[in-house]
Length: 131
Image (tube, rainbow, N blue to C red; front, side, top):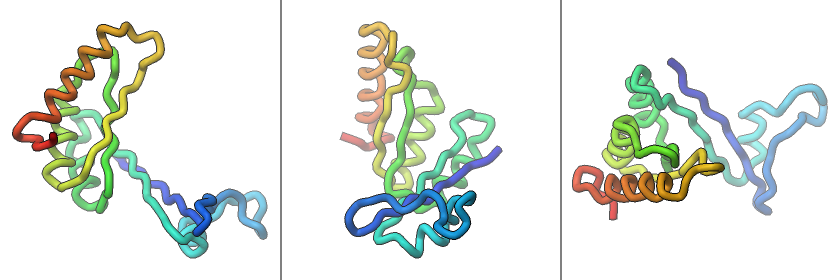
């Protein structure tokens, strides 16, 4: 079970910092180099979604100092119990969430509407505390 992270940096103009190193043209810039050259930085963390790796996800959420959580939901089916766990984790740690529906291409409209309705129900649940 793993979690990965990626540092993205931006100059004061909003232009991204990154790409190839000027001296070592076959190497990408290290995270230290990106951080030094950046006016603002963000860290993207990819945590496990499968129940088997829930401990890893809890560790990542609790130690990552995340500003936002992106919760991916399959538009073709209602949210799973793991979606509920992930929403609960983010809310318990005070992390605002953005729900992203995936697999929309070719998805029947009624399936997407049902999935969206179930997600809204979850977000309004007292244990989640979102309005």
